[in-house]
Each structure stands twice: as structure tokens, then as C-alpha cells.
Image (cartoon, rainbow, N blue to C red; front, side):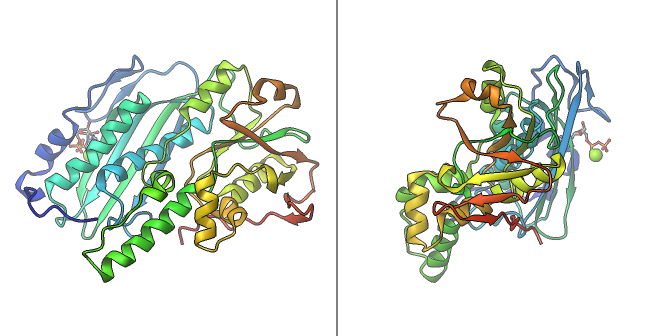
Length: 345
Ligand code: ADP
Ligand code: MG
């Protein structure tokens, strides 16, 4: 992205660690009753009723994000979403987050402010309190680690291991968009490097680019299932691509699975951009990462409660232990699902 050469640049080391922390966290007011004490002491103090759910994730510059096409505000927002998604994938409500940051002198204060603008925006959007973290310098680049906490419902957290034979496999939203958004951004970045005068027209790709740069965690789906009185039997979020997540559910639940190719929800823009890039849309939906949709199983008796809901699609069902997780293609061929995944290494 174009850098604004006019913007003021305040070197980070002109503030010192404590002033920097104060500066970044001054707008982090806490709102939840379960937050007894937030930022400012040696540790935060929380008071949760019921099971506490905790998850953490690390994002490394050059491995998980490229600042050439990821604006810092989006990065802050996405770092939060990635973690909150793991909490929602337990069928839990996210409540607090901690953010740890290692940053090199290459970044001025204004850049770190942008990052925190995204973090604070996500806190507001999802109704979570920022209650702590750590700030340190790094030799090179930016590293960000977010820890999210949440509260499981009275019925307990929903695990990957709870699916049974004949349960229906359900997914929220649509798949593959974030991966294709990244392909579009990478292509535009190559064109920009060759010709800095080039003004990219991302309008025809707006949905996909948004899926990549500003993903949302499906807090709404957890609420929807609660409102519909649907008790998921197992659940996972889709960070690495549908096939690897299906395989996690199968392995940990000790069941097989059949996924129907013609049921996988795809956005029309995704389908047309796959054609433009000469990529097979099913392959991308199965193996492209970072959609942050929820994948879960329900009892067949709950089907009527979700039937026709535009946010939810039944894509298959669980089968007997020992069956290989498989894809039933449009041509009605049965092929084994492979966990290509979104490999960090
Ligand atoms: P300590 O030296 O005891 O670890 P710090 O000076 O690192 O304390 O942190 C002071 C307070 O600021 C703590 O409440 C800590 O959780 C919070 N904090 C530090 N860095 C961050 C950050 N990047 N984001 C949010 N809170 C932070
Ligand atoms: Mg500290």
C-alpha cells in the first residue's frame, strides 16, 4: 500500500516502554462485570461464572502477514478476530483479551497506533475487554500475540470430539473467499512493484479482499444457535481450510464423514474470480485458509431448527468409525478428503 509521506513519524524510542503502553492502552476501558481489574497492575483480575475458555495465537510478519498489502489497522483487527474465532468455536462467549507486541524501531509510534486502532475497534465490535499484554522491542519486524478468554455456556464448551455417526455437518457463511482475496492482493502488489503509478481497481473483488483483510468471527452464529436452541455436538472454526477441519472433527470424534461437493457454500464473486485465476473453486474452498467460519455437527433431530437459515448450510453427515472422511463429487464419485491445510511452515 502507498505510504503517506506527509504523516508525522515519531520514533518509538522517544517515548520509552511505559509511556508507550500508557499511550496505546489509555482508551482500553473495561465494560464487563467479569473484569474485576484491567490494565495497570501486575496482572488482571477476572471473575467468571462457569467454565473459562482460553486460547492464544501468534502472528509473525513475513509468515502470517505481509505489510505490503495488510494495513496495520486491519492487522490489529484480524489478530483479534483470529483469536475470538477460537473462543466462539467452543460455543463460548468471548470476554477478555491480552495483546503482546514485539516491534522493531522501523515502526514509528503512528504505525503502532494504527495497529491498536484495529485492536480497540475489534474490542468494541465483539464486546470484549482488553485487560493486559506485554510490550517489547524486536530485532526485526513485528510480532503480535493475542490471548483471548471466554465463558462457556452452562451446557459446557463444545469440543471437536463430540460428533457421532449420522450427525449432520453444518458450516456457516461461505468458503474460500479469504484465500482468493489474498491471491487478488498479491497480484495487485506485483503489478504495483513493476509500475508504482498503477492504481489498482479492487472494486470487482471487494467481497474477497474484505474476507482477507477484514474477516469477522462468527459471534452471531453462536448466538443464533443459542436462540434456535440447537446444541452442537462438536465444533471447530475454519482457519486452515474445510478439509483439514473436517478431518480434525472426524479424528477427534472417532467417526467418518461424507461432504457433498454440490452443497459447499460459495459466493458468486468467489466462483467468477476462481475462473479468472484458472483455479478449481472446490479445491480452493476445501484447502484455502482463513475464512473463520464455524464448522459443527448437530443431531438430525435439530435439522428443522436450522433448515432454510441463510447463515447455515448442511454440507454432509458423519459416518461410522473407520470410514475415511470423503468428498462426494458432483459426478457422484467418492474421493478421500485430504488435509492440505494452510501450512505455516
Ligand atoms: P510488568 O513489567 O509487570 O509485566 P508491564 O509494564 O509490562 O508490567 O505492563 C504494565 C501493564 O500494562 C500490565 O497491566 C500489562 O498487562 C499492560 N500491558 C503491557 N503491554 C501491553 C500491551 N501491548 N497491550 C495491552 N496491555 C499491555
Ligand atoms: Mg510485562
